[in-house]
Length: 312
Image 1 (cartoon, one colour):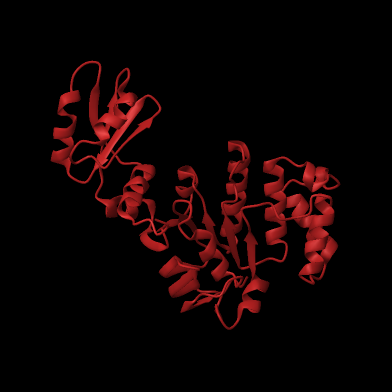
Image 2 (tube, rainbow, N blue to C red):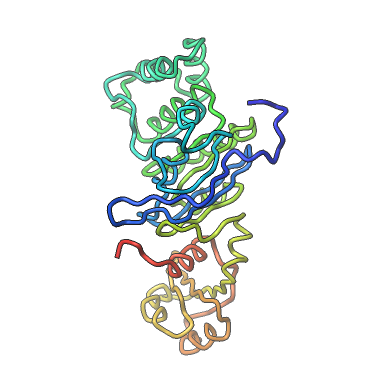
């Protein structure tokens, strides 16, 4: 990675990507730009086209239409160049269960025809805290350790772009935090990261967010940008049993969502006065209501409600 690259250099710059499988239009006119060194969160409900988009960006799938570049290479004509310079970590652990950690990394070094293989493998083991487990079979690792091994393998060839497809699904909170600390360290060194996730706390650790729903990009920007774009108003209810009122309140005019958050209830919509009227019957003991800042989860529930399911 060159230290002389301009800080606003676009690593991903694609326009109008489309991809269909049979009669399902999975990705629709998708466009995105990601600058060098940024960590961009890629969010959306299951079946929204995130994985398909990531595979088009790294050269594993050819778009039906659309144009653009990834790392300066054409996403249709120069896919082999892209593959050589991208690290891709799939949803499912894809290394060999019957090889040790060290053997898996050495195998990946040979696949990429890397020089200094032993040195690179040693550095990767040290960086991700895998030295003491290097002779352990990959199939015997817990989810968190498999995640570390997969990240080591995806970055062994020192890529300029890292694509992560729900990398922390099923991993405990401590392992997730360790993983994200490493991602931020890599970003500080100039690596660009596009990561799909369902965890709102992870989305908030990204520099910016792209939200895709049923194949269409419907929100883009920082967390603050997206909360502002939704124009969402949220009231938080407290008091014994308030969380059980969700189904009843959700059906009232002006209410777009009523979701329990622990012992509280978040009631959201875009019309403040309509929300107040909807909550009027519940303004009595033991319930208390206050307007609060909408959370990222509130915003995404709102965005999901606006999108049309392309699998119906």
